[in-house]
Structure formats: C-alpha cells, structure tokens
Length: 67
Image (tube, rainbow, N blue to C red):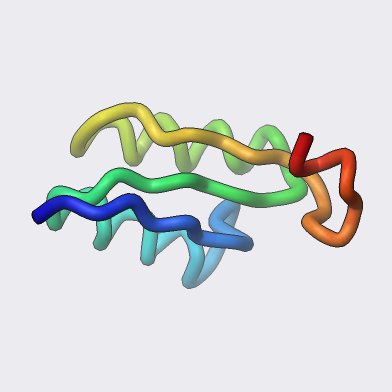
C-alpha cells in the first residue's frame, strides 16, 4: 500500500536522499525546505521516479508557511 511521506529539510543531504528512497519504493512525497531552488532540483529528480511531489517552501515555525 502506497503512503504519503512528509520529509522536512528535503532540499539537501539526508532529506533529499530519503525523498528518493521513498519515491523509488512507490510512495508519494511532500518535500519541505527553505531553499526554493534546491527544493525544485530535488523535486525534478524525484519526479523522474514517480509522481511529481508536493512542495512546501519556508520555515515550518512560521504559520504563513502552512497556509
């Protein structure tokens, strides 16, 4: 059964790698990060292995990010 996974800090490092692992295993991903350009780059890579991810850009401590 496919699940949707929210990965914070997915614009680089272990977060980006986790996004790829989850999408390669058939899961949908929601990418979060503060660096919009890097997040877009990870989203393009993820899209190559499955459905386009949902992207959330911003600081999760800021309530405007979640609106």
